[in-house]
Length: 388
Image (tube, rainbow, N blue to C red; front, side):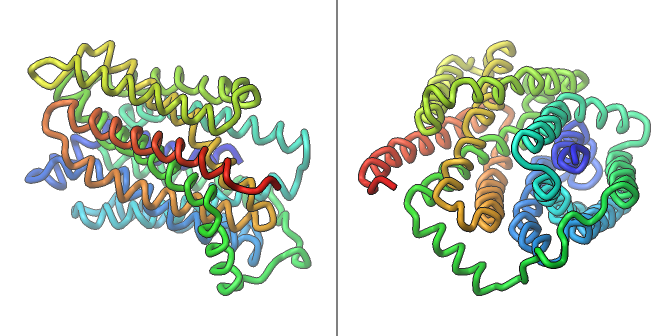
């Protein structure tokens, strides 16, 4: 389960060191397009998330996971063989759709097999491994690229997924009995989506989650060019990114301690307020060349990842709370809508890199400010709702 869950992080973070080589080979006339490799995958993942859960309820867990992994492997092979940037982008979208199957359904499999504390134990192990992947994935991608070029990273994706599929096929039986399956009914799906977006708290939390994920995706798109062109740390980028990602992973543990005391909405609002202050400080202290001291920028980057750990999970919980009667559908819709919209927002922002940190830090400031305003408004809306 952890390997299937980690496919997402591996597929995103391992590509970061390869962006300069991809730009030189596939899009030398417009090198700023290379980071679209990141958001194309995220866009596909968001689209796949919408269908993976309901399909697994109707067809069974194994078939959806195996079909998703097969699609992921096929798309990786197309990207590996292609010499067209547009084809690679299309393959990355399909790769993301395929990865959504194992990622979403793995949680359903755990729920089929375990409940209560045993389920919490398994999920904790899965999440622990998942948070470690961003720490070593860029370094692994860099080492593969040194030996086999950027195409070797796509070959590594194939090997990783083949191992996962073989292990799944040999060790995991079908966990959803035929009598427990629910037919795929588009009318019920549309009705559930309408109910979700009619609820003001759910609607507002999806907006904030979209903005917070946009912050994360924008940083993932622009961080490698910043390290290469501004701070001249291209050769050590994977070490810095991995180390910062590992340190930021403690946000999940801190969130677990603080959320009971402060509440989800208050904690999210505070995290966004700190992000606004830090981003504004970096903007005001950048030098004439559009850069600030590397130590300050690295701390700012660490807090961006840290803020994601304090906000995205809590926002998902806020949106899910009124939707317990349609939890499976709600989880798919919330994940799909917020991910697709965040990718759509981050993609054009990522193309604005101009050799300075201003587009990156400025975009994060604006997105965090908008999210903060919506969270404040959510508090007033919540106060007007009748107690349940």
